[in-house]
Length: 423
Length: 159
Image: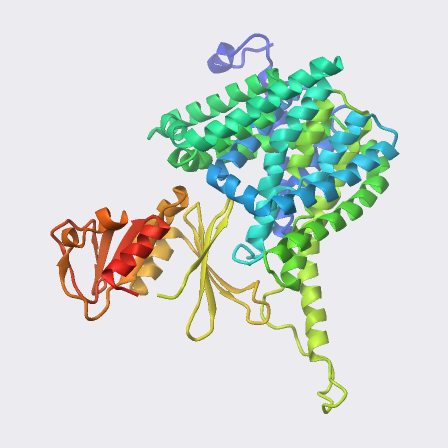
C-alpha cells in the first residue's frame, strides 16, 4: 500500500485512513443534509438521524464497516455529552424548586406514562426487566424536542410553560434514580447482590446531588478557567471520568454525566455549555446513527403497528398529564391543551434508555420497537401541538359566537381566526 | 412601579410580567443565554403570548436605554437568579423626603439591606458610598432578603 504521507504515517498501527474518512464524512454529510430538510420542515432532526442509522450497518442498504469502531465509541461520548449539557442547563436551585412545586404532577406523569410501556412489555411476553425498560422509554418526554418546539412556536412566555418545564425537570431527576436501578437489574446476579448494588448506586446519586446543591459554586469555580481550551478539557475530562466511574458502579454513565452537569454551575456552566454544544451535536448525531445501525430495517416495519398503537395511547396520557399540571397552575383550557400536546414528544432520552437496554442484551425486539415509537412521536407530537392549539381556538370561538335564541341572527359563524396565538 | 411577577423557567431562564395601567399584560422572557423576548399576552387567551419580539442581549440593552432604564437591571436579574433568597427592589423616594446620607439611614444595621445603586434623573449612580446623599425624587436600588427590603421601604417611607 502506498504511504499516505507523513501525518498519516505518524498515526497508530495499520489503520487505513482513507475508507474511514470517506465513510465518516459521508455519514456526517448525510446528517447535515437531513438536518437541513428537517429544519425547513420545522421538524426535529432526530427521526432523520435514526433513518440514516437504519440505512447503514449489517444487512442494510449501505454496509459501512470501517467506521464501526468510531461510531461505537462516539455513541458513548454522545450519551455523556447529551446528559452533561442537560445537567449544565439547570441550576441546583431550579431542580429543588421544580421538585417542590410540581411533585404531584411529576407523580402523575410517571404513573400515566410509565405504566403503558410496562403493561405492553408484559403483554408481549417479555422479561419483567425488558418491560421496565419499555416503561422508561414511554415515560420520558424529550426535553430537547419540547424546548425546541416551545421556542419555535414562541410559547416560552406562555403561562403553561413553567408547568411543562417543571415536568421535564422532574423526569430528568427521575432518570437519575431509574437508570441505576435498571442498570443494576440488567447486570444480573443473585437478588441480594443486585439489591446491594442498587442501594449503593442510589446512595451515590443522592450524595452527589447533595454535594451539587451545597457546593456547586465551589466546583464550578474550580472547573472554570478563562482559557476555553483549559475549560473544555477540564469539563469534558471530568464528565468522562465520572461517567466511567458511574458505569463501573452500575450507576450508569448517563447519570454520572448528568450529575456532573448539575454540580457545575455559574460561569463554568454557561461557557462550558457554549463550548461543548457543537461537540454534543456531533456525537449525539453519531449516537442516534449508531443505535439505529444496530437495528434491521425490516424489524422496524414489523414493529410499526404496535409502535403506532403505543404512540397513540402514550400521547393521550401525556395530554392528560399536561392538562392536569397546567390546570393546577391556574391555566385555562387552551393553555392546558397546549401543555399536554407538547409533552407528547419522545426523543433522545427514550433512545438512550433503549440503548442501555441493548448494551445489556435485554430483549432483541426492544430496540426496533423503541426506534419505531420515537420515529412516530418525534414527528407527530410537534405537529399535534401546533394543530391542536388552532383547533381548540376555533372551537372556543365558534361556541362563543354562537347566536343565542333571543338575539337577532348575527349572520353565521365567526370570521377568520385572529392573531397568531394559534401559530 | 407596577407589581412585577417573576416566574422561573427551569433550563431556560426567567419570565417577568405585569399589567399596565392601560390593561395590557406585558412580559419579558430573560433567557440564560442572554437573549430576551418582549411579549404581550393575548386578551382572548390570557395564558398565551400573542405578540413576541425577540432581542439579542445587545438589542435588549438598547431598548432598555430607549425606555429610560439602565444596564444594572440585567445584571441584577442574573444575580438574583443565581442566589436563592436574594431580592432586589427599586424604591422611589417620596417627594417630601428630607435629604439624608446613606450612613445616617443605618440601613444595613437596621434592616440588613444594602443600597447598591441610586437612580437620579435617569442617571444611575452605582455603589454609592456612605457619605452620598439620598434626596427626594431618587429611586433607590436595594438588595437584601424579602423581609429586609420591606423594612427598608418602611424606613425610607417610600412606596
